[in-house]
Amino acid sequence: MDRQSLIEFSYISRAKDPFSKLQLVQLFDKAFNFNTANRITGVLFYENRYFAQILEGTREDISHLWKRIQNDNRHVIIRELDFREIHE
Image (cartoon, rainbow, N blue to C red; front, side, top):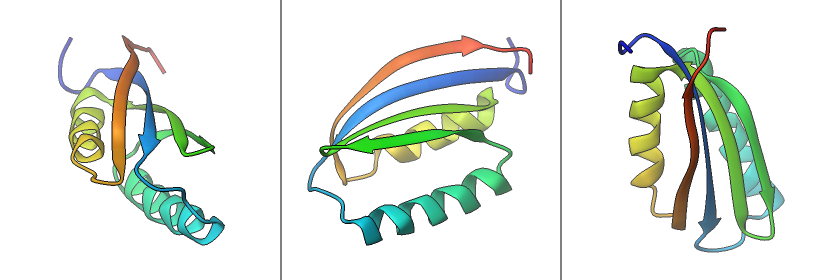
């Protein structure tokens, strides 16, 4: 698999503190802009301080984003769920 192959990646995490509606909107806006600029698609869920996210993009772009997520101090627990190659 090369760095430009497409992958689907999913994880769950627990927020250090609860997110308000405003914080969720701000997070969505920032993530949307970053993901659009980096050709990453996906979906983000939030409930009771837990996030679940599925991301799709190139191996290189998703790996870069995953490192950013892991270093984000708003999370206290982060668990990778699935990482697989996709074709489109």
